[in-house]
Image (tube, rainbow, N blue to C red):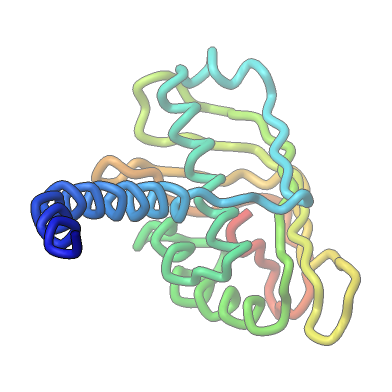
Length: 194
């Protein structure tokens, strides 16, 4: 009987091995798909003027919204490289460039947790099939300072124009423009990304 059991186990081993590999592959595929998902903070919000899709077309609208979602994910997960990848190499914001913005985000990431953004946006001065989009936005960047438990406003902006440019098939932040004013920590007015 033992020999029969051993023989049966050997005979079914290729099936068992194949099944194990299939299950293992399914697990890793499922895990990888979910690893790219991000459960956004309940503090995150984006309100967009409903006419935006008509103004820029559905594809551009969806791509620009994906840009903002990618930026939010990078902020919430403190992914500095992912966030800076959304900036154009030619980024300008007053006297600041991409290197200066990276220094500021590094400082913000080192001091705050549980960060999220609020956006109230409308698209301006653009058209379908364009490689430049201007989004006029008011909003907040909130976070919890180290050692504390309550959210505070890290930065806020009112009617700032975020200029996005399509470079090598991807939307990048080219610059942010609007009325200058002092903000937390900065000796020069700066709204780092949003």
